[in-house]
Image 1 (cartoon, rainbow, N blue to C red):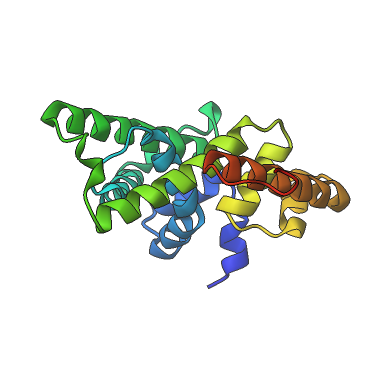
Image 2: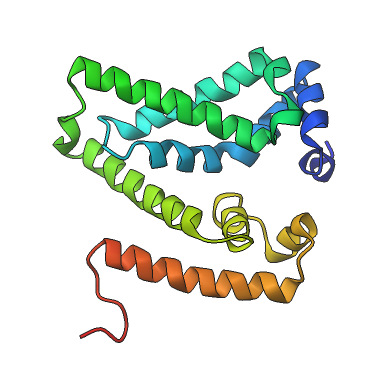
Length: 194
């Protein structure tokens, strides 16, 4: 069970292992991409959705199941596996939103207890993801790696080939900018404001 080997697999190698029904590699892939796909799902749910957390779980499970059933549909020449999974997640989330709009249940976002917690979580993740996506490269990729993949600066340096000093600098400035944007979005005052 060589976890480091699995994590350093190319997309093609990973897909090949899934085609061979390698359950360990499949589970490692789920662990690697789940948090990112949650962010993608919640970024699309901009109008709110009843039982958002439950629906997000269903969508993400469906994405991974589809990959397990048909790994051959991934084409490495058209983009990375991360992009492929993100596009599939976005598409399924939009379909789910259309379904709720068609059924006339999209307005049920002010339900008490569980629904409010889900919506609050959705908005926080969505805001963070949206703000990161507005950043220029390489800050965008660095912050996605740090926040959604929980990569350490040294791991980001290995993946991106950027000096560690630059990565730490971008993380520091990016964090400060994101904190300010998140506070402003929530109507909170930032330091230095009256």
